[in-house]
Image (cartoon, rainbow, N blue to C red; front, side, top):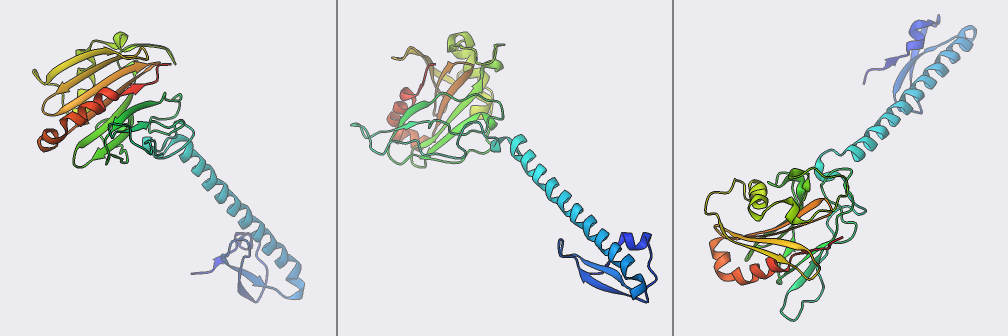
Length: 275
């Protein structure tokens, strides 16, 4: 590495017969300074001291700049999936340790679990559903069709795939922050499934895609819409506060043939705490 000549030395030359290289202790940079005679020593010391102080200040400014950049990245988010919505980042196991009498495990969304929903989201009410043995949580990607609105993915390679979408009702209606809405005020079953079909299935609904529709009021008073769609898709939806919660199940023909009954249990078990 070529030696760096002091800016102060250039501006304030010292009549010295030769120059020597040294390492600045604060930065580790190799510098060049005059080797002065006794008559020039005081001026030479002043130059070296000023150079050292200037480089130290520059190093501190660099460090401060990196620190500010790091904080900005955390607050603003390098990408949507990194924004912390709640108290705890990352995937947190929410599955019960023991199955129920029918052999199903209960998944409950942990309190404070983060999501990729962006800064400013209030805490998401917990939701739950039952799954047979062998289902596992998998990472959510911003490349998914649902984007940052996908809160959870579960999968069993032998049975199918599950996703939970948490979306603002502002997609359908103009409401205030933390407004309390129910699914009926959001729209009819047909309007809701048509509105979310592109991100759930990758395309708009075609005529005849909806095989059946069910409207149910659960034990907690929540209103739910449930659909079966071609080729082998099950969907359940509800709304609370200012969000719509949608659970979707997709399977291949082989998976559906063997596990349709279990997939229907998952769909029917979907619940969201009604605040």
